[in-house]
Image (cartoon, rainbow, N blue to C red; front, side, top):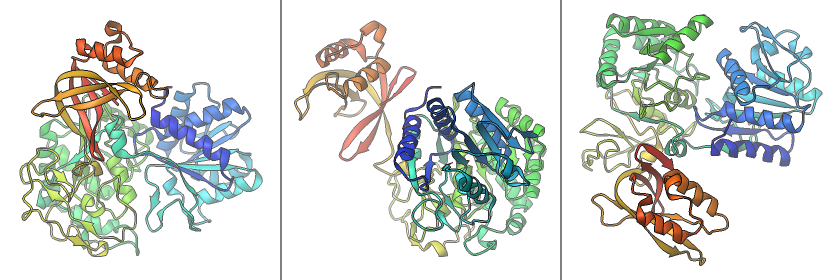
Length: 556
């Protein structure tokens, strides 16, 4: 299996960490949902065992879906992998496997921990579930196995924080993980085409589930489910949500929506009301039998179902790339849960331009952008802006709408600061929303431009190296954008050739080895099929990040 560039970097970072850090320093990989975290640690396992055949791995997870996913991905990466499973729910107890994918609960129960043997590496999937409490099952397993044998421990997660603790890595006593060995950013992976963008629009005021009326379970904890359930079960609110979703998503051609509900009863009622209106919907909860669950998800992927109403099931370890709408009915104080719910829609799929987030629980305004929000925020947060023309979300700094380009009148959309502990977002029962991805802020988000012509010239860098400077003339713009191709540079020549072969028809135009040859070929028409580019302002320069050639996209 060929790895994406960032996945290769992540694998390399793990080998670097274990080659230089103490055995008591535990690394953490933090990559967004849908970025292929399982592929990364599966590749690490394969390469380690290929180099050291006696190495033994334990992959720990807390849910059946994660266990099945880990085994499948390991086999995809390495079909001959000596992998086995320990899970009572799956009726598999392959204790002697060299690569053992195990249920946390099954391994910690009974005498299995005594019989399972020694491991050189322990990998914790969805590592944010590891509590700092030494009496928990994860801690019990790690302590037992590490005491009897020198064992390396690493974790992977999309959300490296826990409610009440904050970040799960660092130097405090309650930090199990020492530091991040590698981290990938959501905007970068969206820009490179590996993740689908999340977009959002203001929902109707009458659809808001007013979390300010709900109590917290405990100080620093999430809302009480029973309180949220009473609010969410209001039939007028349910009907308003379905009408709003129909208008903004279903009637616009979005045919694969996941509703995140606040309780089982709420999910049942949502599913019933949707079915009454002729929507092909199914209920999915933690009590849904495994075979039925797999059939529901298969029907959702095939298009037989348009909606899944779920609670507490589809936030982790679930792949459904077709998902093009997330209806978030559950208000939450948990940043991790909010990010996990958003992440369900970020997988790419043919024909899927983006995923629509409809936030009926005011979580966007509560937490902010999913890639920059921080746990246990104590600082002040700016309110978001809503476009008066199209109702699209925008950051508080936006001067123009990110979706339709309409300008914001300063007096009408002035922002103000509210202390975190005082923000009762839904208290006014006035719907609000904010930027979901931080690169939607002015000067940060990429911009697509139409190319009218392409030319090139020979240029010289400050270090005296000749290079081919490609010019893209932009529609309605006097100044062109430029892209350097450094064919003769000792370290950049490979990149230049790679970009050339992806943009230009190499069979027709050949592959230049000198910049002057590239200039000549471009001016003869080698790049005449380029019709769009995407640029991003970095410092004072607008750098080309993507080139569209007819129907092909090339990321720079």
